[in-house]
Image 1 (cartoon, one colour):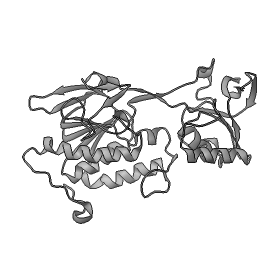
Image 2 (tube, helix red, strand yellow):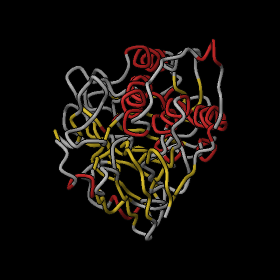
Image 3 (cartoon, one colour):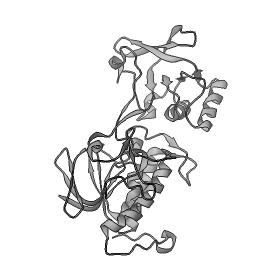
Image 4 (tube, helix red, strand yellow):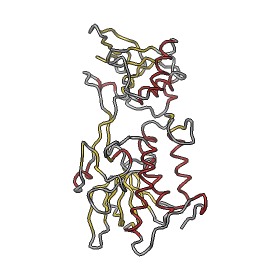
Length: 334
């Protein structure tokens, strides 16, 4: 059995930063994540994607942010269980918990912090006949390595942040980039949308608005996609790769059965400290919901800081919490 002060479910950026905030208060953390590496969606889905809203970084690649967070938490010696899924939760007589994984690992913790992002997730796929036949053979739902698309003709479908960001990024790598979107405006960040429109106006990319994917074609490997425009006429476009980016479909998994208050696949929390309806269980990052919630990494960082202050009373019930600035006291490891 692994014994720790705080068990963090989810090793994404918010879960990693929670280690830092807990460490400042002399609380040990153990992280468990179903993915085989830390970083959550950043490492698994878009490690090379640039992120623009982290304070102090005009732009930082997703994997670089994860690497920096890992370096930041080194002094606090966190432990990890990776590649295992949380399956069970048992409350102990003293109020602490036993968390069990699908591989039989048991973690004893005073506090649980759910930082599972969107939970167990899978990409949303367009309803196109024959799509599955080309998955891995020209169709990808995420960009793990942009170099895969160097000097290739690619079609990106979608209108959110991921579609916009990858269109901008891959426009300097691929031989030809086409962005297909069913509307004439985008759901993503206005600055990114402006850049995409500029790329379209200058001919750097092909921008097909009020259009949508309607078919896929090829002989063992994707070679064409069908595009249906506003007039409902379909035409075929030659391509080497199709990247549909329609977001992720979240699934809470066993967490949904823990007695938490669930609101549209997210966990409702008290914004005083991001505690859930179950004592000693907190939820931070994209997994939680509250009035005014913004699904931004920097918001998750803020939530992690307040969570740690609150969790202290369970881990050190006989000690008085005294807030101290790191600029004065530095970083003191255990």
